[in-house]
Length: 116
Image (tube, rainbow, N blue to C red; front, side, top):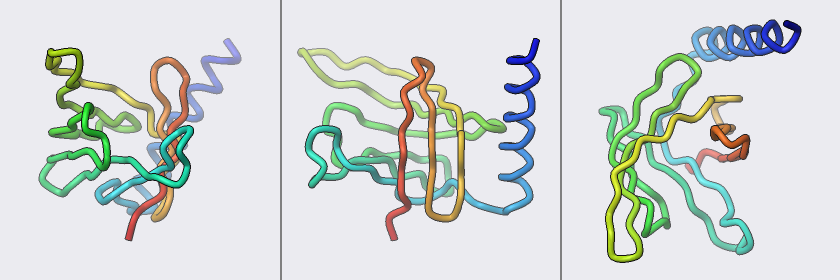
C-alpha cells in the first residue's frame, strides 16, 4: 500500500511540476554514449511532434507524444538486415529547463542535458 501511495505522489508531483513550471520538453536532449563518454547521443523533440535521433544510426526516432508524465517515442530500429517499428513509453522522472530524466520500463535511467 505504501508503494502505491508513494508512486501516486510522485506522479502527481511530476505532473504538477511540469504544468506549473511551464517547462517544455521540446528541444535537443543529449547524454554521453555509455562507455564512450567523449561522444554524445540523444533525441531531438520538435514542436510538431516530430522526433529524431542524435548520433544513433540504428535507432531512428520519428515522432513523440507527451501524455502526462509519460513520453512516447516512436520510430524504427535498424539492424541485422531488418527494420522493426517500435514505440517506447518512458516515465518523465524530472524535467527542468536544462535536465530531462527518463526511466525505461526495465528501470534504466536516462539522464539528458539540453543542448543549446
